[in-house]
Image 1 (cartoon, rainbow, N blue to C red):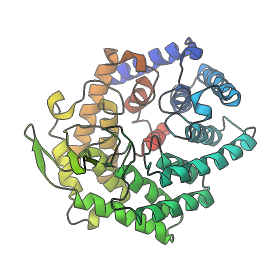
Image 2 (image 1 turned 180 degrees about the vertical axis):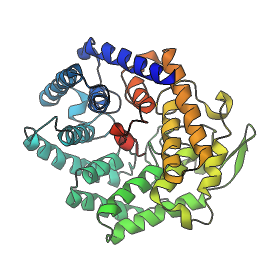
Image 3 (image 1 turned 30 degrees about the vertical axis):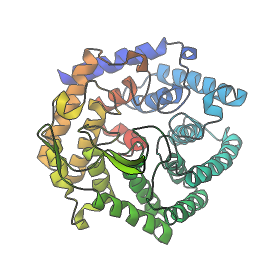
Image 4 (image 1 turned 90 degrees about the horizontal axis):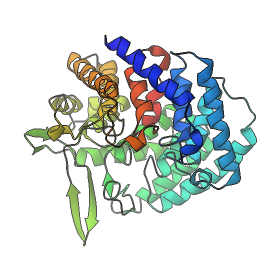
Length: 384
């Protein structure tokens, strides 16, 4: 029954895309705009092969290219992976990998890469360590395309920065959820650790990268402390920041991809650091999250990826794949099925986000199809 629901939901959304006017979608970017649909179609076509997928994909890509060349849209000036040019670079890399794009954009991408390096350096110097909106998303992109020369330059800047700051990786922004020392995947330490690990997999001898990694683990260890909210055990704060010369520690009991105990544990399992961290028991932390399934203990109210059911399902799937532990498989299945049910009801708290990869249908539909190994890599841009 669930398999039929998954297929029906997927085909219904695909058909919606085939008839959609993408000029109506204002954002061009990877996580919230047109390129997110290109990303979705690239992977979903591996399972539901249809020439309409590729024709729609190229239609959207051409619109984005026009907007970049005209320099009238945000994507043409933003370097961020969320809605900017590093997200475009990631998508171009994916299209080439899947043999949907040749070398026709190589000259433009080379110019974009030079621009992105300059912006990444400025971000680091201004203490913007955000994955979605800052330097770490650009670093991820250069690692993905194996441009280690540019990655080395950014890592050198990060190393110099954290050795001159009282509080390393302190995000300089006024946004309550992003600012200060953040612990999640969207904006914080978990993303930094994961991305540095990706780099070290390619260049394990870089001592500055090793020191950055050690600093991430030191910070996570220093802030792992059990506390209770609504009878639930939690371990990491959401973020900490200075306000009126006082350090404020912001805690909540959200369960989600963006920032929660589960996203930290996911990174630690992926990182391979769990075996030698005395203070952080990733298995215990993850097991505690499996007890939380109500809105009051998770904040979850729809299927979207950022802090809805689908992002949680994919993290449990990853942790189960790495550990083989049945309680994590059961948690994955529960949140997977919740995602299917929410999608069947066509329920999205903010329906204007329908087309957004991170806040809408695309990532959720990829999640419910993720048992198919043909799309096993799709969630890597979410650092899972």
